[in-house]
Amino acid sequence: MADNAGWSLTESEPGIFSEMLWGFGTQGLQVEDLWTMDDSLMDELEPIHALIFLFKWVGGHDDTRDGEKVDVFPGYFAHQVINNACATLAVLNAVFNIPPSSSIKLGEELENLRAFSSEFDASTRGEVITNSEKIREVHNSFARSDPFAVEDDGSREGKEEPYHFIVYQPIDGTLYELDGLQQTPRSHGPVPSDRKWTSLARDVIERRINSYPPGELHFSLLALTSDRLAQHSDALARAREAGEEARVVDLEEKLEAEREKRRRWASENAIRRHNSIPLIHALLLGLAKSVGPERFGAILGEARDKGKERRERRERGKGGMEE
Image 1: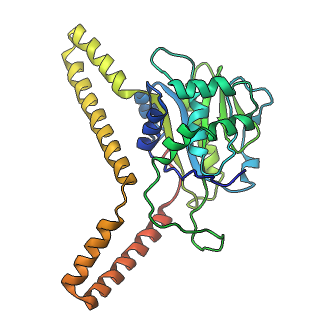
Image 2 (image 1 turned 30 degrees about the vertical axis):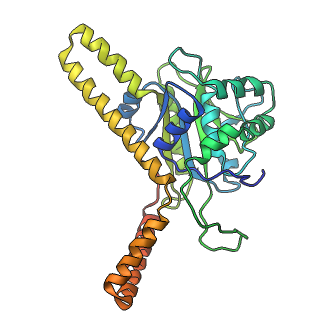
Image 3 (image 1 turned 45 degrees about the vertical axis):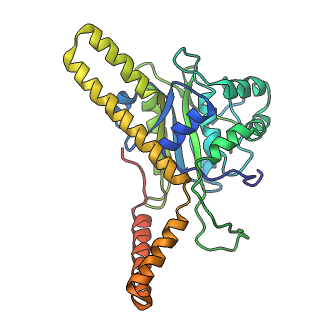
């Protein structure tokens, strides 16, 4: 696999993944954070089209996980051929396998990409996707502003751990695992008629989490869902037409909560893109002039100690998701 080739790291945040999809031109989809895989939350988010799982990548560990590699896959699957592109690859592998629907539109860019690459092998598909200027531009638009260029010669200590995104998705009645670093998708068997596919996926994900040493790894889970704003709006219109006053009040509250969430996402993503270094520099200069060099040095020392404590607490608190 090639180096990052101008692709930035992506955080596991629903606001980033949702705005990324909208930036690609899709309509009718968004991404939600899953703090638990409880049935009540899953039911609330229906329909769920795919689950995007983030985990710390450990070389060689994947050979022991369950599921069967498939030689013939009925859907779309692309390899990851560029470092740092796994988030976008995971999203597109999932989106390209969603059945056609009047409420979901891929947009011109993704429609053209899927049509052009549909007959290619998985590696060539990965090349096509990562060579798209539009896809890379949208992906990189969520990179945190970093005014310092640091050349990595591989000797730095404390480098970020490698994390990786994969997808769990039902296709033609079978639960598949789509991992761009693997040669083929894995099948986790047919979805039983008396169970939802998310229930089967939960069992698979929990087994995978439990296969790692407890407390050593960090996991995150996102759900690719239909557009919640559109869903609530349509349901509200039907409730008003039917004169269901109690349901109207409930849906109005849900609609406003969704709008507020999107405003928060937009604000958070704007902050990510903003270079705050000049402001921080000006504030530190003002503080130094105000308290004097001796007191300023003591304040910096206290700040470093507190930062170190927070990092240590965060490391101790890493672990699996709630059941």
